[in-house]
Image (cartoon, rainbow, N blue to C red):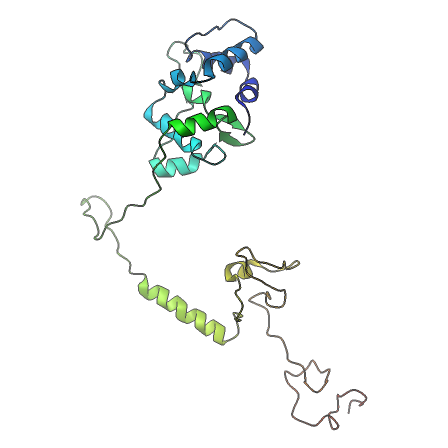
Length: 256
């Protein structure tokens, strides 16, 4: 996180003047450094409460979500999925029709830096203690299918328990055919499936111990087994049973 001084100093003079409108004592005609100092003075301590009163309920939720984030980051996509709407960072200025939009008071709290929108480091702790903790993400569920209107599309009920059991049977058959490697040591199968080439690390993302030998691609041909009698044959999967002395491919023996 960056300080409020650094974030405001990165704004242009027009944006700074737009933010000064939401503070009690705006001074529109001054140099940029003077305006930056004025914003810092009025946002210091509990001065940001004056700007907080100008926020709408959605904008206050956005500040609360960022305040309770460990790094003070505002995640716009998660906020829209959770609340079904997005906070307004700009709005139409009714006094100046030639200007398409101006900054909202939300921009006094949330600033964009390096592709992220976050709170200043100066305000993070105070806003975290002031705003209530956001509610957890929930997914609405129904014991029965809800009633729908006649004009809307009918709901389809799909029982997935049998399909999940079919996937289990298919996986067991793949294990029996040797398409999936199984061992007594834990292996991250999801990561193993995505591994194809390159050096194999010592540990998988799940923390399991792995090795390159057990991380062969799933579509690789089964390895041929060599003769246990020091036979160097690679053409047959297993040499016929014979003694070491009579093995034609044993060390020191010439091929017939």
